[in-house]
Image (cartoon, rainbow, N blue to C red; front, side, top):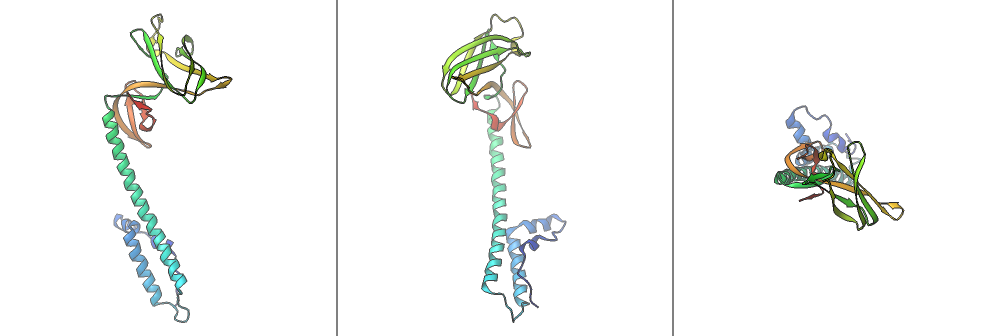
Amino acid sequence: MFMSPIDTSALDAGAASTSSTTQKNTDPNAMQDRFLKLLVAQLQHQDPMNPMDNAQMTTQMAQINTVTGIQQLNQTVQSLSQQFAGMQQLAGVSLIGRSVLAEGDALSVSAGKGQGLFDLDQAATDVKVEVVTPGGNVVGSVPLGAQGGGRHAFEWDASGYSGDASALHYRVVAANGKDAVTATPLMQQPVLATGTDAKGLTLTLGNGSTVAYSAIRGVV
């Protein structure tokens, strides 16, 4: 009886419900073993008047090699992913007690001085920092003039402010001629703890916020 060329998708059909069978269905060596057994059976029962030619044999071997290669690649990627997650955990633990820079516009006020940092996407001909209340009222400003792209720091005299200085925020207004320049405010906070979520490692900061490890802009 002649059997049609093997469909490699059938190798995994009818996977058993037990975990041991599932493992066999995903193990590259087990898949190769099943394929060879099917191939031998097909050769034994092929039509002697219409035997499988070399092209068919080569095609089927290429198919199983492709499937096996994909399975091995998936296993390698999974292993690398687990190793990377472990390295991230170690890196996160080493940051506990240190200060990091993350996106945030909370103004740091100490001894009558407000301080902050920001990143400019590109050079700007005019840069100004505005200090604002939670309601959006501007209570102070720091003109910085022309600045190059990159990271910059500023300081604001908060001695004359009578409100709750810990609630103040800031925004950066930057322009290059008539064109606005993107500025990203940064906050400096100590790392209190680490954790994980669906996207990976997270850091709990001193102000109570939780940020992704990938969002950290620098370590102070």
